[in-house]
Amino acid sequence: MNSFRSPAICVLVVIACALANPCSAQIMLASPFTDHAVLQRDVAVPVWGQATPREKITVSFRGQSQAVTTGTDGRWSIQLAPQPAHVEGADLIVSGTSTITLHDVVVGEVWLASGQSNMEWPLKMDRNGKAAVAVANSALVRHLKIEKSPSDLPAASVKTSGWQTATPETAGDFSAIGYYFANELAQKLGIPVGVISSSWGGTPIESWLAKAELEKTSAWPGFHAKWLELLKVFPQKIAEYPALDIAWRQADDEERASGKKNLLPWPQPPIGPGTAYAPGGAFNGMILPLAPYALRGAIWYQGESNVGRHGEYRELLPALIRSWRTAWPQGDYPFFIVQLPNYADNDPTGRQWAQLREAQESALKLPATALAITIDVGDAVDLHPKNKRPVGERLALIALNQIHGQKTLEWCGPTVQSMHTEGAVMQIKFTHAAGLTSRTTPTTGFELAGADQVFHAAAAQVEGDTVRVIAPDVAAPVAVRYAWMNNPPVSLYNSAGLPAAPFRTDNW
Image 1 (cartoon, one colour):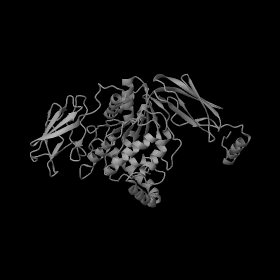
Image 2: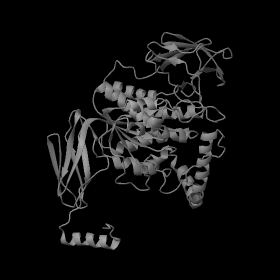
Image 3: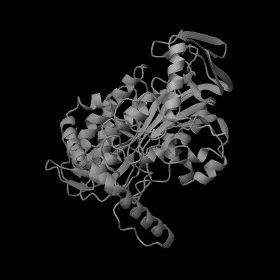
Image 4: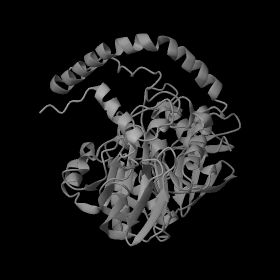
């Protein structure tokens, strides 16, 4: 029997239900709630959804039960009382005129992972992905992938893959950084750790920022003017894009198969309404619908698409953090940033990535923020470095030390504390410098400048927690730089194996 019903018949059924009032809408849960979900421990946990207007909804989980009556629009929301971590899964039951039962729901830590392609990068494509996937068999590590769904207006829901536990069958599609981060936390804490992965390759920061917040920034007039120009050519670009995309993919396949270099420029998807590149598009469609799902914090890896616009980024990254924290009624929850790694780029100045890294660092003026330094684990010739494990584990070190009180774990590389000059020598004192050492001979990556602000390559010597820097061409140094270029030589580490952050003092 054909189960197809015409639209007219469906409309009649809805009208009949509304008039006679015996029909009830099925209860719906917000999209982050599925089997195998992780709920945040030690905080009140919002659970929300939709049902028939004025329907009584009861939510039951681990011995507690909360009831609410839906509003006139059918929406409902309750809060489960705070509870400690639970490794064993339990049923979460939502009942009214119908019932939803979620199985294997655990309580632990929940993190939102977002950004562009390097955060999206799947575990199966990591340098050690094959081995990692083969042993990924832990019910403590869970992952929720958010489908790509930009929106010009704030969306109420978003499609997901559903929560998945880490197994050799599922983990290959997890965010590699998200997996390594969660796995390290789960092992150290012995509790479930869930990662909500909401990322999109190639997207600029303005896609992930609430438009209302973006409009408050000094960058908005420029964005708005560019946007109006893009709207004029959008129909033409949409018409041209499919053929350009097919040609590029064919050339890319041929390069992989025969080694013949793909000379075609990558065709950027058209920018316009309803795309991931629209101001606020990714925020509206892929971040806002997740709120107020209870989180421990967020990890962020983005910036490649904003290289060359570092001045704007200084303002936009703090604005993004504020807009996300506003969307979640949890106050200043932790927000950890992956500082961009080394990459040569084709930038003639050789400094634009350094400037973007510096802009990322400027966000640390906000509370509960931190940087994971990755200046030593990039790839000079590949925008997508394949070694994601140290990135995830360095983010986990920050969380373990700063949130979970494991103060014996060093979480930060050597950081400048002070500096002074002695004649031609610049002396730099570092914190987080236990076991400060140089992994290169001679020590590399330093530059000195005098009053003329012309920088020269410099020699450096490590003495305890201090580095002495000298350059033959600089008799009276006033400023020093370290690793302050797109793809710098890196030498300084502490005994925890963490690299010194790039820095310069000529802007202090």
